[in-house]
Image (cartoon, rainbow, N blue to C red; front, side):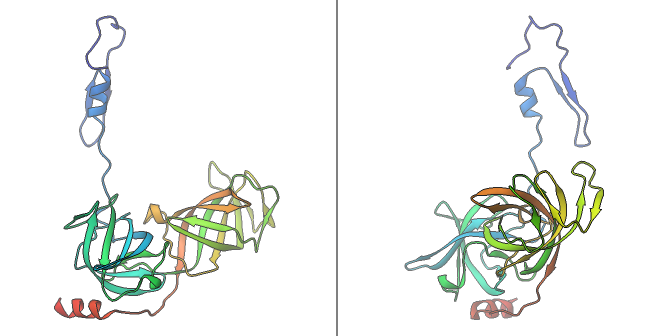
Length: 261
């Protein structure tokens, strides 16, 4: 584990060839040291699904959540989807310490101006109003795999979807095609129903305003579980989203911040 053993002459060591630089060694410790840390998606636009919203005396409204992509800084003018509410971030904290910026993976609380606790809720997504802001979805196309459903799933089936922190009923408005789970090739166009073990491309329509993204662009906001009868009946990834264009509230703080810049 820590140093090469004399009793294992048959083990000639290991080597890895990769574009970031080749690595080789004989011990477990060397293998662990050779692992490349995954890169954080800081270059993408900000996406921060809200886990909760608190009202803190003397401070005000504090939404809490994990940064999934991008960077959150004090002074950022954020838009909350799907309600399209825009305001300025006063401060960002993690574990009671002020941060100059929050990066993907950070669980943070951030103080916002001119917004009441009632206007925000779990499942909303914060994004930078000037850099590809998040929007509500009118409907979205996804590939689902049915894991465990006692009957048949047909058009009109409306289970609950758990996607990031959102928990919203969505209707299977159209089952477009049944496809092979391994190759992804189409097996049947417009099937009447799908059952356990099947993979399909479907169009889903949220029953309430909901913010989701394509898995290819924002993986944490593009995968979901389908829940019904107190169990997970299917899982899926979002291929494309048809966004809603909606006007929303812009707070005085956001207007002031825009004028400053």
